[in-house]
Length: 185
Ligand SMILES: *[C@@H]1O[C@H](CO)[C@@H](O)[C@H](O)[C@H]1NC(C)=O
Ligand SMILES: *[C@@H]1O[C@H](CO)[C@@H](O)[C@H](O)[C@H]1NC(C)=O
Ligand SMILES: *[C@@H]1O[C@H](CO)[C@@H](O)[C@H](O)[C@H]1NC(C)=O
Image (cartoon, rainbow, N blue to C red; front, side, top):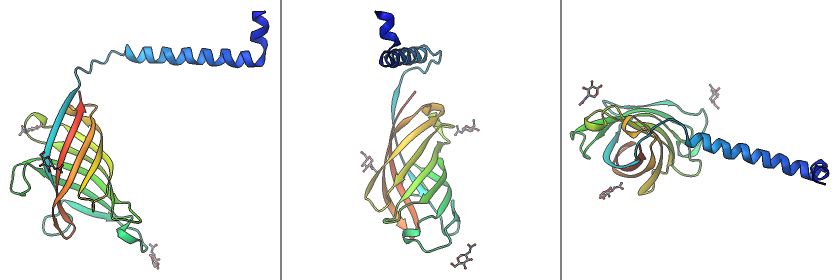
């Protein structure tokens, strides 16, 4: 009776999925037993100012590509940056790190960017540590929310959120305030 049931095509499919689910459950168990000791998860709040200077005497960003064609909102432009991070809105305030990466103008119907930028610190407890943003940034909005997708050093395995407000805009050069909340190990 039982054997007959297994021989029916429907029962074979059922047995197949039962075996598959056992494999998946076992997979989870193996992951929980992994030897990596990550320690305790922490929450860190960061506050700093990002100076994006693409034009003028001492630029820290370079326009490296733009499309050969007419698109609205400078769509398709690509800018590579090594921008300064400071404690205050004033460029003369203490430098605490730099933001290296690139951003592209990705909005066809609005002025908007996508950032792929590593925010690294060069002083104090976080010297040598960084977190990574990979997110869209609709720069004409008063406050933007960007996704933090990873981190290194003190910010190992970070995920989080960054809130941005542009404080100063001179032509296309901007000083942006960042409030960042990170969950990390
Ligand atoms: C750029 O666009 C112009 C005008 O459409 C065209 O004549 C030229 O060949 C293009 N250059 C390249 C490198 O595609
Ligand atoms: C930051 O770390 C680098 C590399 O370890 C070191 O050379 C530098 O002196 C440190 N800076 C501060 C301010 O601690
Ligand atoms: C960051 O937080 C401070 C203090 O809560 C607040 O005054 C400021 O407006 C915030 N800025 C952004 C960009 O969220």
